[in-house]
Image (spheres, rainbow, N blue to C red):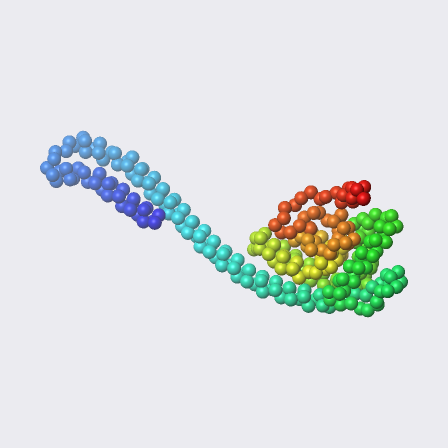
Length: 288
C-alpha cells in the first residue's frame, strides 16, 4: 500500500513538472505569443523547482526505507514466534521427562527413624520406610525434635531448624533425600531461568511440579532449603509458593516464622502482612 502511494505520487509530480517545463512549447504550438524575457524567467524558475523535486525524492526514499524496515521487523517477529513455539515444544518434552523422574525418584526415597527417636518413643516400629511413607516418617521425626527444643525452653531459630533437618534426616539418608530434592530443584530452576517463558507460563509449569508434592514433602522441602547445601532452594520455594499445602503442625508453624508469607499463598492470592502468631496465641490463652 505504501509503495503504490509513493509511485502514484511520483508519477503525479513528474506529470506536473513535465507540463510546467513544456508550457512555452505548448503555448507556441497553440500560436500564443511568448515574450522572450518571460520565457527566460520561466527557465530560471526551474532551479528552485528542481530543489523541490530533489527534496520530494529524498522523502520518498526515506518512506520506502521505513516500509522496508517495518516489513523486516514483521518478518523477524514471525521468525521469533516460530522459534518460541519450537522452544516451548522442546521445553515441554524435557520438562515432562523431569516430572516422570521426580515421581520415580520419590519411590526411591528411604527413611528409618533414628535410634534416639526410637528410644524416646518405645512404641515406634523400626522398619525402613520408602516413598510417601518415608516423607511422613521424616516429618514425624522433625516435629518430635522441634517439640523437644520448645519444651526445653529453647528458641527454634532458622539455624536450629536447618540443623535438625541436616542431622536427623539429611546426614542419615542423603543418598535418597538429597538425590530427590536435587531433581526437584533442577526442574524448578530450569523453569525459573528459561528466557523464552513468560511469568504466567513459569507459574503453570511450577504448579505442575508442586502438584506432585504431598503435604509432608512440601514441609520437608522447606526444612531442606534452609541449609547451605540446598543452594538457593529457599528462593525457589518462595517464588513458586511451595509451602501452601505443607502439612500443618509444629514443622509448619516454624516454617511460618522463617519464610515470608508469600511462600504459603496460592498463585492468585495477594501477599498480606504476616499475622502475629504469638500475639494471637497469647490472646487465646487469656480468653481461656
